[in-house]
Image (cartoon, rainbow, N blue to C red):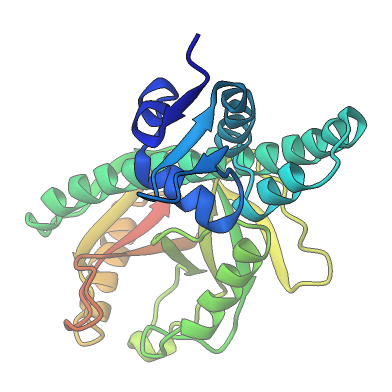
Length: 281
């Protein structure tokens, strides 16, 4: 029975590339049984294939090459391997949790984009409309100095920091809450809080932060949508406010404003789609 195989044969028999075998030889993870001094050809003994399977297995479960090299080159006992695999299992579980959060974020963002496209179609009509909105879990920060004329970037950054510290990411969905009232102009409007949405049921440690978890209730909302503009903001607010007052609509006296990006390039002028919402009682 043949005992030694060329690098090409070894690669073919073990479903691995020749380039990978050469790299493993270079970094000392898996060396050939011998190298022909005359032509430099590498040859592997058939018994080495078993250890190549171990390397492939370790790599498959996400083990870094340096860790694989340590395992292969040291006197690794079954006890050591058992301990290592338990550690690696923890790493994999963390990665799975991270991927699951990424999947939920992606699904939430897709849902928001569908909502955004729906709002865009209503914006073109420049009319007041009523639409049903499901309950939203939010992470919010209190604020008392921000108006439609002050960029709330630092407050938004605080929300992003809380999420990023726990390995999550903020999406592009930001909202603002303020009182529904008769204002002389948009400079009189002060946001009570700024928020972003999170997945329902998420557990976030916010102890010691001036940030709270809350919900925006499900229900029918009276809305108006427009392209964000400080110049025309008050005009759209007044249109919504007067509609509610003139029709005697009972509300919770809060305005929920969302602003969603229309383009995603930092090199272009900012463009946001804005919707003002008021919950009907």
